[in-house]
Length: 139
Image (cartoon, rainbow, N blue to C red):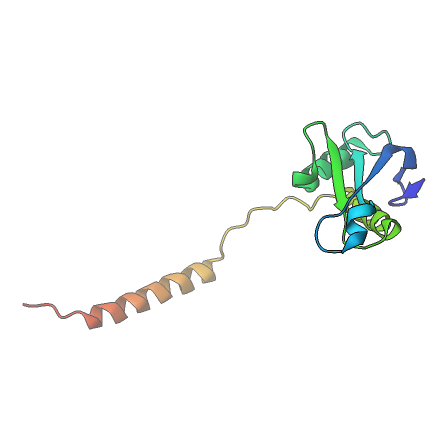
């Protein structure tokens, strides 16, 4: 079990890992060793996640989310398979933790104070007077 928060834990069987060859520089090592990790987690059908967390997680995932509701995380920054695996898993855990946070409270609309309205109008009048002084009116 992978513990996310005190109330959310994910079974390791829900996470599917596959290893692929990394792209970019790395010499001969890149051509023969599959060090990049492609981690897949089905956020839509996961029994470990509450519904509200699952919905927020899918919104947070953005382009990492497939049409089936599967989150795909690719890690290939490190040269070893284990470090890439740990990196991908920690990124998934962090994403789920972010989704598990309660949503911010709704904004209560407020009205500007009387003083702020007066200051705004005063500033506009002053600016208007300045501009009037610049123009010469032929009479």
